[in-house]
Amino acid sequence: MGVTLKNPLILGASNFVNNIEKLKQAEEAGVAAVIYRSLFEEQIQLEDYELSSQLEAYDERNAEMINLFPKIEHGGPKEHIFNLKQVIETLNIPVFASLNAVYKESWVEYAALLEEAGAAGLELNFFSVPRDFNKSGHDIILQQIEVLKAVKSTVKIPVSVKLSPFYTNVLKTVKDFDEAGADAFILFNRLFEPDIDVEAEKHVSPWNLSTHSDHRLSIRYIGLCYGNIGANLVANNGIYEGMDIVKMILAGASAVEAVSTFYHNGLGHATEMLKELEEWMDRKEYDSIDAFKGTLSSNSINDPFVYKRAQYIDMILKSEEYFNPVV
Ligand SMILES: Cc1cc2nc3c(=O)[nH]c(=O)nc-3n(C[C@H](O)[C@H](O)[C@H](O)COP(=O)(O)O)c2cc1C
Image 1: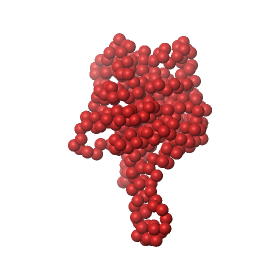
Image 2: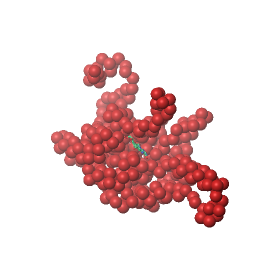
Image 3: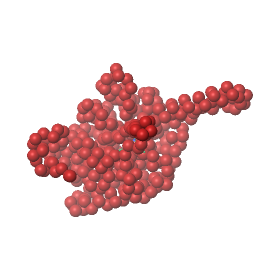
Image 4: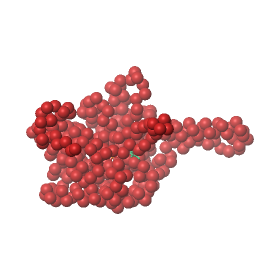
C-alpha cells in the first residue's frame, strides 16, 4: 500500500496502545509497525450521552453552578487524537490509525483528523452488528463502499479495509472494495462477543482472543485473493508463531497483524517470531519476502481445489495427506 516496513510483523489494533512503555517494548522486540486501536464513534456517542445525563442530573440540583461555570461538552475524538499523536511522536516505526464510525460524514471528518495527527495510513474497521431485520447485506456493503470512496477522496494517506469473514461471498466483497480504491485488505477482523455466566445468570464480556488454528481462514482467502486484486493483503487472526508468518506470505500476504499471541506470550515474543522467519528464509535460501510471496496462492498451484474444499467429502477423508486426525 506504499508504506515500506522493515519486516512483515505488525502489532494489530489492541489495548497495548494504552501503555506507551508496552509499545516501546514492541518496537524493541522488532515489530515493524503498530495499528493504533480504533476510534469508535459509537463510544464517543455513549460517553457524550453519559456526560449529558450526569450534567442534567446536576442541573436540577444546583442551578447556580451551571450559570457560573462554562458549558461542559464532551471532547469528541480529541482525547483519542491527542493520545495517537503522542504514540506517533514516541515511536520510530510507522503508526497506522483505525476508524469505526457510524455516519458517512463522521467517517470522513474523523479520517481527516487521523491523517492530520500523522498516521502513516488508515485502517477502516467496517464491522458493526446488524440490528435491522430489513436491511440486506448488499445494502450494507454498498454503504461501506460509499464510505471508502468518500474517505479516499478526502485523505492522501493509504487506506486499508479490515473485513470480518461474515460476508456470503468474501471474494466479491474484496473485489468491490478493491475497485473502489482500497490500498490493502486485512483478513480478517476478530470481534468482541458476549458470553453468559450460567451460575450468575448474567452476561459477561471476556476478551475474545484467537486460538492458533484460527489463522487457516486467512490462509484460504489470502490464497484465493492473491494475484486477482490490485490491493495488498495483510493476514490477521491466530498468527502466533514465525511459521504462521511464513504460511501467510506463501499464500500471498505482504504482512501480518498479530495481537493475541502477544497477550499470551508477551511482546518480546515478536523477536522469536522474526527469528524463526529469518531462519526459515536462510534455510530455504530466500533473500527477500518477494522471493516466496504468493508461491502457494491459488493462481500459482496446480491443484485448484486446495483452497476451495470446505466439506469433508470422501476424497479428503480417505487421503492421509489431507486428513491426519490428532487424537
Ligand atoms: C483487547 C483487544 C482490543 C482490540 N481492539 C481493536 C480495535 O480497536 N480495532 C480493531 O480493528 N481490532 C481490535 N482488536 C482485534 C485485533 O486487532 C485482531 O483483529 C484480533 O485480535 C485477531 O488477531 P489475533 O488473532 O492476532 O488476536 C482488538 C483485540 C483485542 C484482544
